[in-house]
Length: 472
Image (cartoon, rainbow, N blue to C red; front, side, top):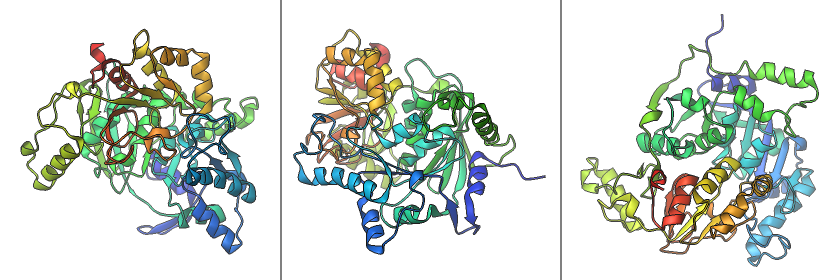
């Protein structure tokens, strides 16, 4: 009898071409995603070496990082910054030259790459999906094996050979059981995990998220969880596929044709073999009780610097480890926060709802539910994760809720998550953000970022300070 396997071990084994236990193994890549912020070096190398893309139909290019979130009608010609404009143009040039499907500025399927992959059914259980982006783990929410790769040599290797060299990581299962309290979301769950284990807590591991709390989540919530695996130090995050996954995928453009029963049934039969065996062993285990969680906000310059909104800014003197104590003090100095300050009293200058973490339709609904009938007291913007999400939100009237509250309603883009397209937080301004990172300068030089859920960001927009959404 074969040994019991985890989801990760099972999918990894099916993709090994050249085994080398303990060292790097050559893996077959089912699908490769490229975006405008990370491809030109690899394509330049391919061009100079006279190489072609090995399997162009298994690569998808998407313009997301540098595309403007406003005044899109005449882009890219109207992009004022010449460097940004050239990056947007280059992906289109490279995609056409190398025969790759490209969802550009004006394509109805355009969006953030980690949003549209699942949305289009490009992401499926059991597939190995490569992408030169650290948040590739998002795709693991559907039971895929996500592999983040480098922007030059690794991407060039995948494009030219449809394979990638990787060292197999250890495994870590994080089990969350129980019912989440009201107004506690997937973003709060992953921030609580990172606050507990730290940004290096999962280094060298592939994480499987499991338990009744995860199984009760929508695919959107699961994507938020997996998305921030890298913020815990893991390059891979996965969730076993189940009926929620299959229902989500059925009928999507790249999914097995739902009208052809045989194709769908074959895929479904395979997908059902993937979940971890009941007696599968993991190198590490961690468990959380969902009922003990609360809405979270970050106060420092790392996602691990996060606490329940009911807490206060920590006292560095209370940290016993000298190195960590120094890091906490530096974070508070940068964030201009005094120890002991109640988190709910921190004033905010602006709000951003968007990013590959929290810009799906479920996220926009959650934020709109808080905003309904209220007004933003500070500048705030909503940037949907894809053009399709924007269309759906408009069909549901969510755009009107945001506009009536004084929010800006923009086009799909990575936008103010990293600011590659010019959407930046001004130096010294404090931003309540649904993004995944809050390190120094992430949203712009001198920007002060507090990360949180869409509902919590919406609450901050209403009050002008960090706010416990449960009190509104």
